[in-house]
Length: 144
Image (cartoon, rainbow, N blue to C red; front, side, top):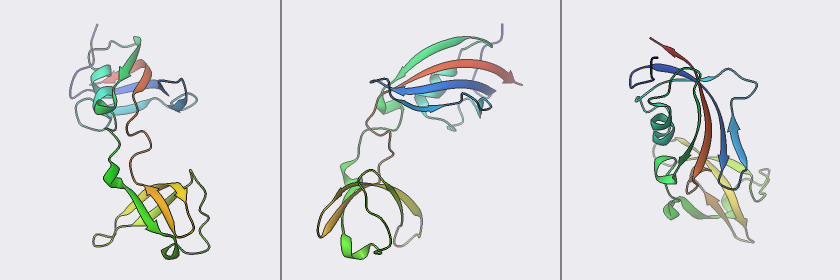
């Protein structure tokens, strides 16, 4: 039976949870995720977990944060002057905002971590940075 290998386009159903069991993503009710193995389209640990699977095979993989979204980078947690945020933007802990970087104009999503009288603490890390992930995988098909 053919096994998934680098260069193959695979179709995978998955359920992603944190180590405490909290669900963060799933393909349930949707089309399977399609990607080319070894191309960098998905996180390394996910790619490695699917490699070698046969069509119809199911398995659970544990991905340490270093093979997922990496550790939390404290340099990406910034204290931002509250006065520089437009008054019509609600500042609630846990909400996400889009900021434009000076110089290159790229948009970066940040999460509001703290709201003070004069400053807001914003986190530009990926929401899953620093977290170990668990995926239940099922290889649905391999395209040649």
